[in-house]
Every structure is written in structure tokens, then in C-alpha cells.
Length: 447
Image 1 (cartoon, helix red, strand yellow):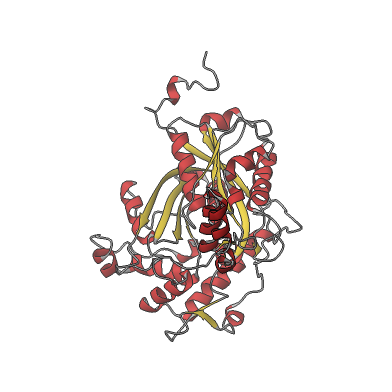
Image 2: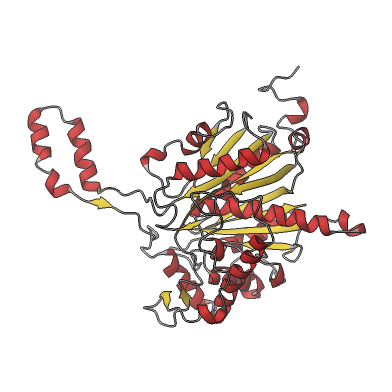
């Protein structure tokens, strides 16, 4: 008889299993220095994980893995995912590990989980991420750090005295900055360059931002998020959400990125704010789901990661998804139009518009992506239908888990509405997330 640690024959690495997305949980996202100002990464992810455990009856359950990470981490966040497991009602025999790929962290964690399930290494796994910009890891300056380390290694009192004399001149702290190490430019300033190069206008950006708030507010009102979000520290909804946002109101805001270059169009209203939050999704094999009487919302089909040379090349910092998506489509025999939903992370409204314009451009697709023709346009009514990052906010590593669970539920709802022969046809969603460092992650879900 097989034991818990001995895979049965059908779960050996030679066999690929379908990967079900069963659902997810997150805490409401909060603007920086607000409701979660005193909450740590561990506090927030443990809360999100605890909500998942409660929702799916996982108390005492040993998962194959809990995978996730944070972009901004303190030294106390060592082994963060494992510490969150030990602080939850999951079995302490559940292993966990951290990953980090900037804003793509949550989705990359889900890819790790999906790969493990497909290969038979896990029957069930949780994946997500967390970030706080309120509790940013302020560290000693490099000079002070090196002096203190040398003081620890000193072998004589004379050496210690000499080093101690350097301490006053070494004082200083390092505060995390939102800039690319290779260029010194912030993500917003990088995107402002791309926005201007591609001719994305202010009105289009404000329209997309207003739609994100409108769609997410409507989704909350109809109860869509009732089984995706659990309250935390007095918040029941994302506090960045502006149900009454409009193009007219957004038009009154002054640009904040690309101002020195002139013709700036990116404002606080069509850009995501600094945000705190955590999210986690539950993935499993079909057999595990059936044994636990859980119905899959969707299936994780495939994923692709890409990177661009934004330092010395012609590509914009956040344009890597334009490379990842066509590779993903080609591998799965799909076109850009073969989807019922498009979930494109709204780091900035102009980022989404730049990606869509790039795929519509024959020159871009041929010269940059090496394709024979443009990927073409999408039906914009299928884009971010329940709101996205401009409305919810963007706690870097937590965005992937939010999008994954939200998309899976959208697919399940759409599938349930299909009647007759249409009910046998798959319903698909394309997920795309840009990330710092010139990277991008894309995935396909299906129901």
C-alpha cells in the first residue's frame, strides 16, 4: 500500500496531471501607511493563508507546498513562507519556500505549484505573495554595516578601538527606493518614456483607470469577492477602490511621471499606488479535489516568462509580456483572439495600452517579436472585467495571486452560464503581468 510519502504509479514523473485552480483568498489591499501600517509581511500572509484554510477546510491538512514571496523583505522575513505555515492551522509537516520575481512573484509561485502538481510531486499546493510598503525594510548604510562586521571580526582590543572610532563617520541608513539599479529611473519614469514613444494619450489612460474602478466596485456590490476576500484589521474592501471615479475627475489630476520630458500624461489616478496586502491561491490535482469534494473553478494550462533588454536595447522596462504572450500562444496553438477574458496587470493604465498597441502593430510584431504578422486586436469588453490593479492597488508580490483566483472564478461563472453545445466548449483566460527588471509572466487558464 502506498504511504503519504510514496507516490502511486499514476503520479510518477512520467505522467502529467491536470492542474485545477480551486480558488483563493486575500485580505483587502490597503494604501501604504494606512490600515496596515503596523502589519508585517508575516502578519498579512498568515492572515490570507488562514482565510484560505478556513474556506477550504484545510485545518490539519498537509499540503505538498506553500510557495510565495515578498519583494520588500526584512531580515526577519527569513524563511517567510514556512513561518507563515507554522503560524497557520495547516499541518506543521507542510513544507514551504520563497520565490521572488518582482511584480511577477505571485504568478511565478503559482507556476512552481502547477509544475509540481502536473509532475506528480504535489497533490495540492498553495501559492501567492505579500508585500508592505508601509513597513519598508530600512537598513544600515553600507559603511556602517561593514564597520560593524569588521568590529565583530576584530581580534584585539586595539583593532576594536580603531574601528569604534570610525562609527560616528559611518552612521547612516538605507531606505528602499523605487528605481531600477541599472538606470536609476523609477518604474513610472521608465513607463513614461514608453508611453510617449508609443503615443498613448491621457484620455485613453483615464478611461481605462475609470473602468477598472467601475468594474471592481460593481463586482464587490454583486458579491463576486465574497469568497475571495476575508476582512483584516477593519478593512472589508480594498481602500484604494473609488466607486465614483470618472474620466472627468481623473482629468483634474496633474501628471507625476515624465514631467521633465514634457507632454506628461501619467498621473496618480492612472497609475497604481504603493499598497500593502497578501493573496494566496489553492491548486490541486483533480483526484485530490474530488477526494475533498471540491469543484475546480478552472485549470492552469500553461505559462511563459520573458525578459527584455531595457538597459541597452530598444525595449521599454515593462514590455516583456509582449514577448511572453506570443510564445505561450504558439506553444498552445492559440491566437490572441481565442480568449473569453484578458487579465492584464494594470501597473499603469498606459502599460496595458502599450501592450495592446504592440500586439496590434505589424511592425512591432515583426521587428521585435520575430512574428510573421501582428497578433491583432482584442475585444476590449473582455479586458479586466471585474477590475484590476488600478482599482485594487498593487502590493507587488500579492498581485499574481489576486489575479489568478479572480480569473479562475470569472471562468467558472462564465462556464456555468453556457447552455447546450456551448457548454462543452472551453472558456479561456489570458493572464499577463509585467515586472521590474524588464521581465514579464503570462499564463493561460481554462474552464
